[in-house]
Image 1 (cartoon, rainbow, N blue to C red):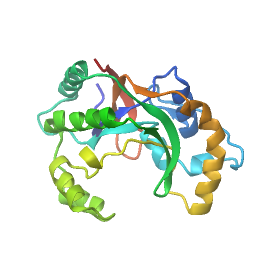
Image 2 (spheres, rainbow, N blue to C red; image 1 turned 90 degrees about the horizontal axis):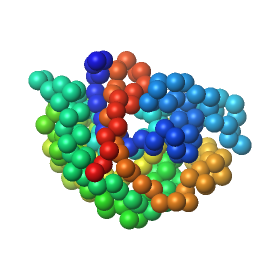
Image 3 (spheres, one colour; image 1 turned 180 degrees about the horizontal axis):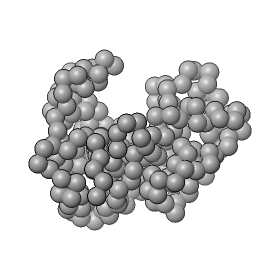
Image 4 (spheres, helix red, strand yellow; image 1 turned 120 degrees about the horizontal axis):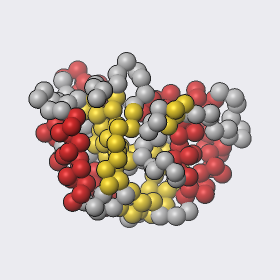
Length: 231
Protein backbone atom coordinates (compact mmCIF):
# COMPACT_ATOMS: atom_id res chain seq x y z
CA UNK A 1 0.00 0.00 0.00
CA UNK A 2 1.45 3.34 -1.08
CA UNK A 3 2.30 5.80 1.67
CA UNK A 4 1.21 9.40 1.19
CA UNK A 5 2.58 12.57 2.76
CA UNK A 6 -0.89 13.84 3.61
CA UNK A 7 -4.49 12.68 3.56
CA UNK A 8 -7.76 14.57 3.18
CA UNK A 9 -11.46 13.77 3.23
CA UNK A 10 -13.24 15.28 0.24
CA UNK A 11 -16.47 15.09 -1.63
CA UNK A 12 -15.87 13.98 -5.22
CA UNK A 13 -18.73 13.26 -7.62
CA UNK A 14 -19.28 9.66 -8.66
CA UNK A 15 -17.33 8.61 -11.73
CA UNK A 16 -20.42 8.03 -13.89
CA UNK A 17 -22.02 11.41 -13.11
CA UNK A 18 -22.23 14.44 -15.39
CA UNK A 19 -20.61 16.52 -12.64
CA UNK A 20 -17.54 14.25 -12.58
CA UNK A 21 -17.34 14.25 -16.38
CA UNK A 22 -17.29 18.04 -16.38
CA UNK A 23 -14.99 18.56 -13.39
CA UNK A 24 -12.39 15.98 -14.38
CA UNK A 25 -12.21 17.18 -17.98
CA UNK A 26 -12.05 20.83 -16.87
CA UNK A 27 -9.09 20.04 -14.58
CA UNK A 28 -7.54 17.51 -16.95
CA UNK A 29 -7.35 14.43 -14.74
CA UNK A 30 -9.50 11.75 -13.13
CA UNK A 31 -8.15 11.38 -9.55
CA UNK A 32 -9.89 8.01 -9.14
CA UNK A 33 -8.01 6.34 -12.01
CA UNK A 34 -5.06 8.73 -12.39
CA UNK A 35 -5.93 9.06 -16.08
CA UNK A 36 -5.02 12.31 -17.81
CA UNK A 37 -7.94 13.78 -19.75
CA UNK A 38 -8.35 16.15 -22.66
CA UNK A 39 -9.26 19.61 -21.40
CA UNK A 40 -12.81 20.81 -21.81
CA UNK A 41 -12.96 23.50 -24.50
CA UNK A 42 -14.77 26.70 -23.60
CA UNK A 43 -15.95 29.39 -25.99
CA UNK A 44 -14.09 32.62 -25.31
CA UNK A 45 -10.97 30.96 -23.84
CA UNK A 46 -7.80 30.45 -25.87
CA UNK A 47 -6.13 27.08 -26.41
CA UNK A 48 -4.15 26.20 -23.31
CA UNK A 49 -5.82 28.88 -21.20
CA UNK A 50 -7.87 26.43 -19.13
CA UNK A 51 -4.70 24.57 -18.13
CA UNK A 52 -3.00 27.88 -17.29
CA UNK A 53 -5.75 29.00 -14.89
CA UNK A 54 -6.27 25.65 -13.12
CA UNK A 55 -2.78 24.72 -11.93
CA UNK A 56 -3.63 24.40 -8.23
CA UNK A 57 -7.13 22.85 -8.50
CA UNK A 58 -5.79 20.39 -11.08
CA UNK A 59 -3.28 19.11 -8.54
CA UNK A 60 -5.91 18.63 -5.83
CA UNK A 61 -8.51 17.11 -8.15
CA UNK A 62 -12.14 18.09 -8.63
CA UNK A 63 -13.49 18.07 -5.09
CA UNK A 64 -15.11 19.84 -2.19
CA UNK A 65 -13.13 19.80 1.05
CA UNK A 66 -14.73 18.23 4.14
CA UNK A 67 -11.61 17.61 6.26
CA UNK A 68 -8.57 19.56 5.02
CA UNK A 69 -5.27 17.81 4.20
CA UNK A 70 -3.26 16.62 7.19
CA UNK A 71 -0.20 14.50 7.98
CA UNK A 72 -0.81 11.28 9.87
CA UNK A 73 0.35 11.38 13.47
CA UNK A 74 3.14 8.95 14.43
CA UNK A 75 1.66 5.60 15.37
CA UNK A 76 -1.42 6.00 13.15
CA UNK A 77 -1.84 4.16 9.86
CA UNK A 78 -3.84 4.60 6.70
CA UNK A 79 -5.72 1.37 7.47
CA UNK A 80 -6.79 2.75 10.85
CA UNK A 81 -7.80 6.03 9.24
CA UNK A 82 -9.91 4.26 6.62
CA UNK A 83 -11.62 2.22 9.32
CA UNK A 84 -12.44 5.36 11.30
CA UNK A 85 -13.87 7.08 8.22
CA UNK A 86 -16.00 4.03 7.42
CA UNK A 87 -17.30 3.87 10.99
CA UNK A 88 -18.20 7.56 11.01
CA UNK A 89 -19.91 7.43 7.63
CA UNK A 90 -21.93 4.34 8.55
CA UNK A 91 -23.58 6.34 11.33
CA UNK A 92 -24.04 9.49 9.24
CA UNK A 93 -26.70 10.35 6.67
CA UNK A 94 -26.53 11.49 3.09
CA UNK A 95 -26.89 15.24 2.55
CA UNK A 96 -29.07 17.12 0.09
CA UNK A 97 -28.64 20.84 -0.59
CA UNK A 98 -30.10 23.24 -3.09
CA UNK A 99 -28.73 23.29 -6.66
CA UNK A 100 -25.14 24.31 -7.36
CA UNK A 101 -24.37 27.91 -8.26
CA UNK A 102 -21.43 29.27 -10.26
CA UNK A 103 -19.86 31.95 -8.07
CA UNK A 104 -16.76 34.08 -7.64
CA UNK A 105 -15.22 33.57 -4.20
CA UNK A 106 -12.64 36.26 -3.62
CA UNK A 107 -10.44 35.98 -6.70
CA UNK A 108 -11.28 32.44 -7.83
CA UNK A 109 -14.33 30.75 -9.35
CA UNK A 110 -16.18 27.79 -7.85
CA UNK A 111 -19.46 25.90 -7.77
CA UNK A 112 -21.23 26.17 -4.42
CA UNK A 113 -24.43 24.52 -3.16
CA UNK A 114 -27.36 26.73 -2.26
CA UNK A 115 -29.51 26.50 0.87
CA UNK A 116 -30.23 24.38 2.79
CA UNK A 117 -26.58 23.67 3.65
CA UNK A 118 -26.77 23.10 7.44
CA UNK A 119 -26.48 19.31 7.10
CA UNK A 120 -23.42 19.69 4.88
CA UNK A 121 -21.76 21.93 7.47
CA UNK A 122 -22.57 19.39 10.19
CA UNK A 123 -21.05 16.57 8.12
CA UNK A 124 -17.81 18.51 7.63
CA UNK A 125 -17.60 19.56 11.28
CA UNK A 126 -18.24 16.00 12.40
CA UNK A 127 -15.46 14.62 10.22
CA UNK A 128 -13.00 17.28 11.41
CA UNK A 129 -13.69 16.34 15.02
CA UNK A 130 -13.96 12.57 14.62
CA UNK A 131 -10.68 12.25 12.71
CA UNK A 132 -8.63 14.83 14.59
CA UNK A 133 -6.81 12.14 16.56
CA UNK A 134 -5.11 11.07 13.33
CA UNK A 135 -3.73 14.53 12.56
CA UNK A 136 -0.14 15.52 13.22
CA UNK A 137 -0.36 19.08 14.66
CA UNK A 138 0.76 21.82 12.29
CA UNK A 139 4.18 23.33 12.96
CA UNK A 140 4.55 27.06 13.57
CA UNK A 141 5.85 27.75 10.05
CA UNK A 142 2.76 26.18 8.47
CA UNK A 143 0.44 28.09 10.79
CA UNK A 144 2.24 31.36 10.07
CA UNK A 145 1.71 30.78 6.36
CA UNK A 146 -2.03 30.57 7.05
CA UNK A 147 -1.89 33.69 9.22
CA UNK A 148 -0.30 35.70 6.41
CA UNK A 149 -3.68 35.99 4.68
CA UNK A 150 -5.20 37.63 7.76
CA UNK A 151 -7.36 35.68 10.20
CA UNK A 152 -10.12 36.65 12.57
CA UNK A 153 -9.84 35.74 16.25
CA UNK A 154 -12.17 32.77 15.71
CA UNK A 155 -10.18 31.58 12.69
CA UNK A 156 -6.96 31.83 14.70
CA UNK A 157 -8.57 29.76 17.44
CA UNK A 158 -9.56 27.09 14.93
CA UNK A 159 -6.13 27.11 13.30
CA UNK A 160 -4.53 26.31 16.66
CA UNK A 161 -7.20 23.78 17.71
CA UNK A 162 -7.95 22.00 14.43
CA UNK A 163 -4.96 22.85 12.21
CA UNK A 164 -7.06 24.86 9.75
CA UNK A 165 -8.87 28.18 10.16
CA UNK A 166 -11.90 27.55 7.94
CA UNK A 167 -13.75 24.84 9.84
CA UNK A 168 -16.93 24.68 11.96
CA UNK A 169 -19.00 27.83 11.32
CA UNK A 170 -16.14 29.27 9.23
CA UNK A 171 -16.55 26.38 6.77
CA UNK A 172 -17.81 27.19 3.26
CA UNK A 173 -18.13 24.21 0.95
CA UNK A 174 -17.09 24.83 -2.66
CA UNK A 175 -15.90 22.98 -5.75
CA UNK A 176 -12.91 25.02 -6.93
CA UNK A 177 -12.63 25.61 -10.68
CA UNK A 178 -9.75 28.10 -11.06
CA UNK A 179 -6.65 29.60 -9.57
CA UNK A 180 -6.77 33.24 -8.45
CA UNK A 181 -7.70 35.47 -11.37
CA UNK A 182 -7.57 39.19 -12.07
CA UNK A 183 -11.00 40.84 -12.42
CA UNK A 184 -11.01 41.04 -16.23
CA UNK A 185 -10.05 37.41 -16.71
CA UNK A 186 -12.48 36.31 -14.00
CA UNK A 187 -15.40 37.89 -15.85
CA UNK A 188 -14.32 36.25 -19.11
CA UNK A 189 -13.88 32.82 -17.53
CA UNK A 190 -17.24 33.02 -15.75
CA UNK A 191 -18.93 33.90 -19.02
CA UNK A 192 -17.25 30.92 -20.67
CA UNK A 193 -18.19 28.53 -17.84
CA UNK A 194 -21.79 29.64 -17.38
CA UNK A 195 -23.36 27.76 -20.33
CA UNK A 196 -21.23 24.67 -19.65
CA UNK A 197 -22.26 24.28 -16.01
CA UNK A 198 -25.88 25.42 -16.42
CA UNK A 199 -27.20 21.82 -16.83
CA UNK A 200 -25.32 20.83 -13.65
CA UNK A 201 -27.03 23.57 -11.64
CA UNK A 202 -30.63 22.49 -12.08
CA UNK A 203 -31.18 19.58 -9.68
CA UNK A 204 -30.56 19.46 -5.91
CA UNK A 205 -26.97 18.71 -4.94
CA UNK A 206 -26.60 15.44 -3.01
CA UNK A 207 -23.65 13.90 -1.19
CA UNK A 208 -24.11 10.16 -0.61
CA UNK A 209 -20.49 9.25 0.04
CA UNK A 210 -17.18 10.85 0.97
CA UNK A 211 -13.70 10.11 -0.36
CA UNK A 212 -10.23 9.69 1.10
CA UNK A 213 -7.60 11.47 -1.00
CA UNK A 214 -3.84 11.09 -0.70
CA UNK A 215 -1.11 13.64 -1.42
CA UNK A 216 2.04 11.86 -2.69
CA UNK A 217 4.10 15.04 -2.23
CA UNK A 218 6.64 16.69 -4.54
CA UNK A 219 3.84 18.63 -6.24
CA UNK A 220 2.30 15.47 -7.69
CA UNK A 221 -1.48 15.31 -8.06
CA UNK A 222 -3.69 13.91 -5.30
CA UNK A 223 -5.14 10.41 -5.72
CA UNK A 224 -8.65 9.31 -4.79
CA UNK A 225 -8.00 6.28 -2.56
CA UNK A 226 -11.48 5.14 -1.58
CA UNK A 227 -15.17 5.96 -1.22
CA UNK A 228 -17.20 5.59 1.97
CA UNK A 229 -20.98 5.49 1.79
CA UNK A 230 -22.96 7.68 4.14
CA UNK A 231 -25.49 5.69 6.10
